[in-house]
Image 1 (cartoon, helix red, strand yellow):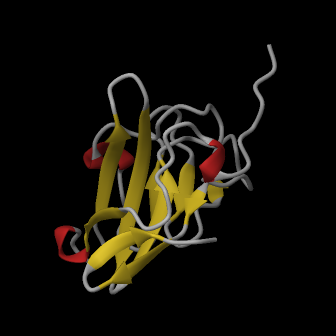
Image 2 (image 1 turned 90 degrees about the vertical axis):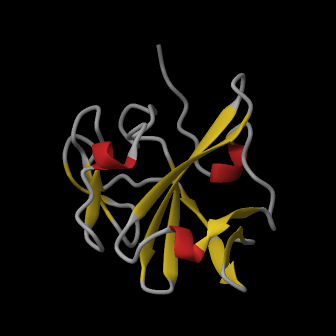
Length: 128
């Protein structure tokens, strides 16, 4: 069975629209992570938010290797603040700032990045 790779976060069912507020910046500690699930039980869209100062990096909560969520809780991302997060399924390590796998079975592959901006303290889905 061949699994088709998703190339853009917007292609995943349940992806948030541009302009959707995901959270408040002050809800994520500097060097901290946050996992969100948007949508209903039947169809959820998982997001990982990583904060570095006033910058926020957002990724689809989906491993580049297996296509499963990286983690169900932040503690299972085994985050090294400002450096990397790790998949709880097979321990691939992804860089904090660009989502590229730098250690593990999917080295060189990457998490699907979601463009976000901070507007008046809100973390908002942005245009590409």
